[in-house]
Length: 175
Image (cartoon, rainbow, N blue to C red; front, side, top):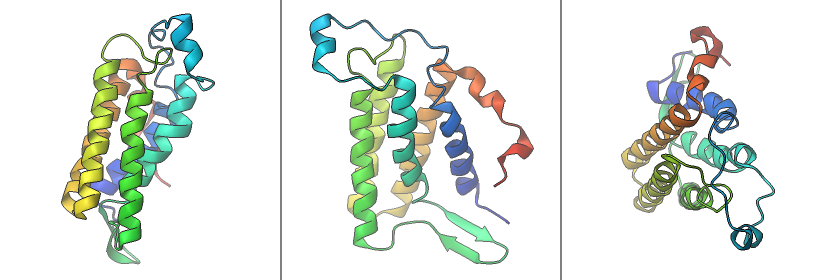
């Protein structure tokens, strides 16, 4: 099957994020200590690894599967972009969730030292771009925002779990 570079990249990131976000904090610094008063306000039952695996990564997957195109030997060329108002609203809503996921990364008890704040804020900014692209129903802007989300995720993995990129072999990304 011939697949567009974006779809292949999105698939690779989806696969990487399934393991990568799950492992994003395996060897990262401890979360910044919150005061007892701060920590008691928030329910942080999920640690950062669980948060990434169960909250952020599924939201990103929806967005990556909503942009790009596929060239298949059997089915030919087709696009993944939303085709109706309901689909665009779904993308908008997931963009809003990405904005808030960035904010949740900064909660006392979850935030970490180093560039963590930069990556969390960039996550939120990309979420706003996704929402804007969805509001304008602009395929190219959505595609670019998906690429920006990929860049933010990759940068976080490089900073907090650099070995994640070596876990995959060139032939290991087939379905």
